[in-house]
Image (tube, rainbow, N blue to C red; front, side, top):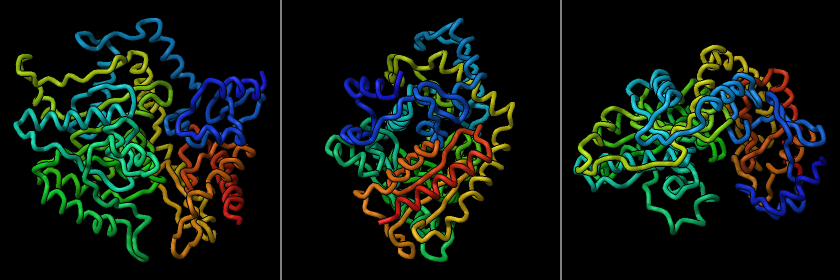
Length: 449
């Protein structure tokens, strides 16, 4: 089969996500036949390094033999069973192992289907907790500017990226927005830590004045991924945890994109030395294989719902595929690879290679910033370097990088004018250096007038 054959069939029937379909009149779809390791291969034998982990989900490469075997073994045993009134060994094993590796104090696991669903669970659980404690007035949430938490209506309301949110604003609940500690906006000579502390002052004020009406603060620790991979210092979350405790407000950590080693530690919260009240996980949980998400919370939260049925204090939230046995088996295989291969330690050298491979771009006249947390690195193109003036979004400079990369065996999918690497952990240093060369070429092409 030729690429064009499957593309023609696709365009007659498939509506693709996060896509203006009219673009495909001039931008051909890339049909993928198979994957192996970091490589994706189309129907004509062209290959592409998956530098974005297929939307940040793939940890250990495509068609990983150990994960494949875990799926085969589980399919022979049990594919799925209702998790209301029933249970199974994979979900019990996974829950035990997640509690073992998560920040101390997170002892209960509630499963859902995807990242947005996990955020919805945490929002409802926080509100319901306060309601069960007779504090129904606590019904508002605080987010950060430039944040993103998913596309379902509750999760979308907690986001602050206009591109995704503005169209649906009239459908969304109101939230309280605090300024982001995003280090890109710090003053010349100001450290990332100092800027984060300065930005925290407004969050402190909001909590001091309005804590009686606030259920929870929702944050993406260290990296605002869909918000153009903007990054910040962990001190912000250390201070936030202290303030939430002081004012009696929950802290929800959305680690759907940044969990499982993306920031250099297994969970980003570790770098702030905190335990949130709710930890939302998905994406890397199943290493890019299957949809599964989980919200980890505390015994304190769990106990607020534990009562006789007639009190109607139970958390009556469900998804058909909650705790899917195959998904849990994949997640268990994922955690085993982390243990057996000492992945976090091995990634440190890969992260250093990433930094070194793009260091020359710091002097590029149209690179305003290079930032990195662990295995996530971002390069921001700007129109004016001294003033960090962005290119107009209508010019779609990042699209030029994407198109060039495809011609050089790489899948780079910039966010606006931000080129980023978030590759599977099985990538080699040679492949990283190739991506850096491709990105450099693409940036040079993109900034030409």
